[in-house]
Image (cartoon, rainbow, N blue to C red; front, side, top):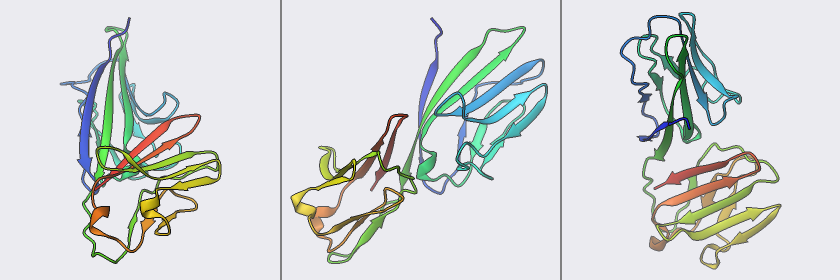
Length: 201
C-alpha cells in the first residue's frame, strides 16, 4: 500500500499560500508534478530541469502560480475561494521511489459587516451546472438556508422572500437582513465529478 502524507492548510481570501513539498534540493533526474483535484488537471511541473506552470483546466490559476525549482514548493498568489480544494504533489526519479503528498486547502472569505435591514451578496465565483445540487447552510448546526436540486429550489421559511441565487454562479444574495442572519454561511456544490465546499463568515 502506498502511504500518502496529507496536510490541511487554511488561508484568507486575497492572501498568498505556499504548499511545501518538503525537499531541500531537487537536483538530478527528478520529475515533480502538482495537480489540482484530479490527476488529469496538471498545474505545475518540473521535468528534466525545466519547470512550467499552467492555468488549470478552467483557467482559475492564470498568473497565480510560482514554482520553486529547488524545493518544489508551490506558491499561489491572491487566493480566491475557487482555489479551495485538493492539491496533489508527486515526485519520482530513477534513483528513488515515487513519493506523494496531498494538501487540502480551505480559503476563508473575510468577514462581512452589514447593517440590519440592508442586503449582502455572498460571492463565490463558483460556476454551476444545471444538474448541480447546491446547498447553502448556516452555523455549526448546518441549518439549511436554501437548496437547489434539478431546478427545484427549497428555501428555509426564515429566509423566504429574502434570497436570490446567482444564475451562473452559486452566489447568494440576502435582503432585509436581521441580527439573526449573522454567522458562518457554508456552500456545498455536489455533482457527478466532485464536491465543492466554500465557507463565508
